[in-house]
Length: 101
Image 1 (tube, helix red, strand yellow):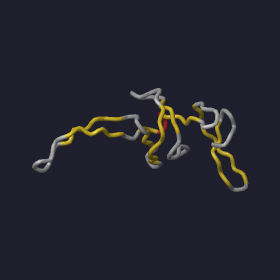
Image 2 (cartoon, helix red, strand yellow):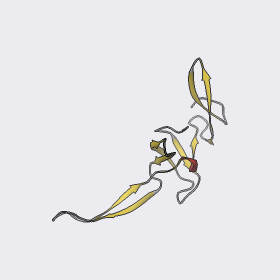
Image 3 (tube, rainbow, N blue to C red):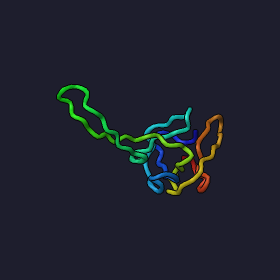
Image 4 (tube, rainbow, N blue to C red):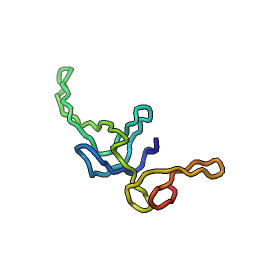
């Protein structure tokens, strides 16, 4: 997976398309990412014990990594990610400005 925790991404598809946020968590096996403030849903939780109130919780659900695109920190454009190997070190490269991410 070419996205890492802390990357700034732009959402391409879904109800939050056009929004930008940081990646909070990456699930590489399932190909999903959790983006801060995006893909949020409300969940009603019933009070289980006496005295505990019922409440509505806002959850951030994972979304497919194919629905987001990385925003390059150098050129500030949405871009695809490439790789460059120099002396055994593999680094990510912006496809638009050709600089390391």
